[in-house]
Each structure stands twice: as C-alpha cells, then as structure tokens.
Image 1 (tube, rainbow, N blue to C red):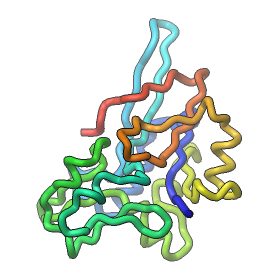
Image 2 (image 1 turned 120 degrees about the vertical axis):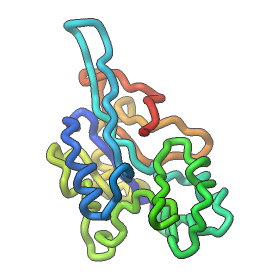
Image 3 (image 1 turned 45 degrees about the horizontal axis):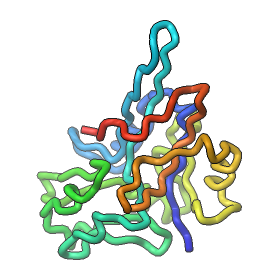
Image 4 (image 1 turned 90 degrees about the vertical axis):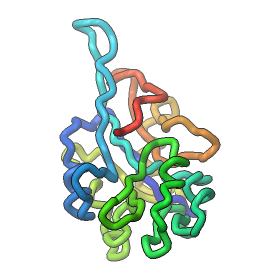
Length: 197
C-alpha cells in the first residue's frame, strides 16, 4: 500500500510562516482560514535555559480518518495513495467532519458553504510537483512522499533521524501519518500541544 504524507523536521523549522503564506497563495485560502498553521510550543524550562519549537499543524492524513467515517454524503474520502480529499460538489457543509477531526485541521468556507482542508496541493502533485508548503519552506524542513516506501525521501529522512526522535500528534485510534522530527537538544516534544484556532 502507499501512504503519502508529510514529514516535518522541527529541529530546522524557524517559524518563518512561509508555509502558511505559500499555502494561502497557492490555494486561494480565504482570510481567517488556514490549511496549515504554525504553532509556537514553549518556551519551556527556566531562564536562561529556555527551549521552544515551532509546530506546523496540518491535516494529519490519518489511515483511519474519522472525517471519512462521519461524512453523510461521502464527500470526504481517501485516495488510493492514502490522502484525504473533499469533493466540494458533494459537501453539504454540515461540519460533521470538522467535529470529528481531533486536530482542528478543517475550516468552514462560509462563502462557498463547504468544508475545506489541506489537499497537499493535489493540483501540483498532478503535474509532478511538490506541495506549495514544501517548495516554499525556507529551512528545508518539510518533506512529502510515500512513507510506506522504504526507498522514498520521507522514509530516508525518518530513518536518518532515529526512532527516538520521530513523533506524531496523539493517536485517538485514527492513526495519523504525519511525522515530526525533534531531537531533545532542540526541545522536549509536547505530546498534546494546543489545537490551532
């Protein structure tokens, strides 16, 4: 099976927000909505020994996505390579998927009366390109690929980091696939940071 997802190296992320901006520009995301959002985690510790990291919060591309299960019109679905999509023609704007997502990764577009989320720039993937957030990352900390393929770039990045430095947001039975790399020298991983607003 294939499972395309993101791997984000938090040791390198500098919180520049280039991913947020690139996403908004590429996808025409309205003001007040985000498909990706960078959260400050910290500072932690006691002065002068403080640590902090930046956590890009995105759709976690769950293997057992609750948003897919609750959608009454099947507008939310999984692709053959494991990505989660929304068919806006089928979406009735009921927001059931928004309530089901434990990460707050969906937004309601009041103008279009549909729910929207990160598509990992499916239109760019269709022409062989990387998602806009990956291309725009100034620190080169974002990677996109098939995590089930041991020869993929994301699998190699994860292997190089070492299992003890690879983290994910809490698994509520939905099996999130996005992985974050964070070494203890940078900061201590917080397993349940605040949801994006």
